Amino acid sequence: MARMSRVRLLGAAVAARLRKEAGQSRSAGPSVGRFSTKTARQVPGMEYQDAVCTLNTLQTNASALDQVRRERSNPQLQLDAMIGFLERARLGVEDLEPLNIIHVTGTKGKGSTCAFTEQILRGHGFSTGFYSSPHLVQVRERIRINGQPIGKELFAKYFWQVYGRLEETKEAHDGAMPAYFRFLTILAFHVFLQEKVDVAVIEVGIGGAYDCTNIIRRPWVCGISSLGIDHTQILGDTIDKIAWQKGGIFKPGVPAFTVKQPEDATAVLKDRAAEIGCPLRVCPDLKEYQVDYGPLCLGLAGQHQHRNASLALQLSHTWLQRRWNPADESFTPTGGQDAGLLQASPFKPSSIMVKGLADTNWPGRSQTVKHGAVSYFLDGAHTMRSMQACVNWFREAAAQHERNASGPVARVLLFNATGERDSAALLKLLTPCRFDFAVFCPNITEAIASCNADQQNFNVSVENMLTRCLDNERSWHVHNRLGSHKGQQLLIEEGPLGPKIKGDAVVFPCILSALQWITQGRDSVVANPANIVLPVKPSVTARAAPLRGAAEIQVLVTGSLHLVGGVLKHLDPASSN
Image (tube, rainbow, N blue to C red):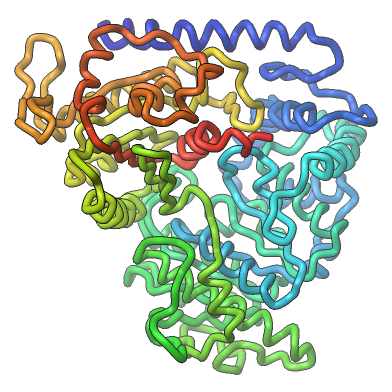
């Protein structure tokens, strides 16, 4: 009862505001509302936000949800349905071949691998398309041309072209419209074809075998980054089941590369490659590549990025070989088209490759942002393996910052997790970081100001989000050997700022209110008077004394890329323009 009471108190203002916006949107006329399930008409001159609001209706489109439920018992229906939607958008799977696709899957690191690969090929002078998910701040980040998210006008132009074609044919297909991710995948293919890119780097959404990107029939090369346990309800609950799904992107005769994997996963990938007739090779360690001076420098921090960089070198090298020698069908680094598993050979990267690895930027992954006395460490880790990598990176990076600090440093965790993920297990991995505070909030950017349509999620209620945060708070107390704040003794320890509650935890209803409490006016961007937040109870304000007394504040933001995106929206308001 006490927990439900807290949920109601925390969520009342948020939910009321969202309900008010929903009501206003439904009566606002032809423009699509934030919470309306009524689709917008295709009207010339519709703006970007109109397109995004219409896109959001596909999150909760009843026919799309019914179709997803039917497909769970027969995954092949997912690909069949995707092909049908593609054809209704006046594209065929054969139309995708001019995109010269690089197709990449994996549990962790597939986005970083794609970012390295795209940067290298762009450095060689090729025009690039890059499709990834999820987005951090704006949905158009998912579809990039030459490294940049497509502009708002371009997004709106191509959105209405594709949406119009699908809507005008839906009555002949029982009113069916593609779900959110399927639509964006079709849109990405359409954009890349219209913009005539030389290469499209396509990141798989979930899994591989039945992911909607797997309608690609003959990519130029495929890659599999590090595998781990995630999306178990869809992919299976063991590493070998997950590896089978990921290996589904292999194609006959198309070279594929993977990083070193757990033994069970490697065996499954080897069998899948042999069954499909795909030449599969394991990437060497990054240190094995021959460079003229020193180790390769990476633009992305963290030891785990070395595997991704090696995979990107093999993918880009193989693509370039085929581009430069189109008549040669033996275009893998080691030559030949043997199916099965072999070792890929290291090579001497060109100066353009070396520069590409160093220049790669992929926000929200092992990213550090410093605003005066506040340092933000941002990483969207949400699996056990990626969270351990995040912890290793953060402890090293934070220690380096602390050595240069002018006085005591306060350390804060800002955390949220979504879906089926085991928050308690992830939080347990974070306890060695010795945070002064753990702060939990849902992936709601702000509770009072109008929300950005790019970051709205209609699939989870506000109450469920806040309940998850309270569960996380309880788990944190357990891992730090704390009882609740009511009637049970808390562990007190003496720190450089005086007595404090060890591992104290606080829950906030939105990201902005959490950031303002953490930074205590020390970050002028977050403390902007234009940012209006819900009032904080005096008891919560009093608990922030260690933050006010610290010379510097370190904030690790992790557990969800959506949380990281919401934080980046506030740290860089221009990113929403």
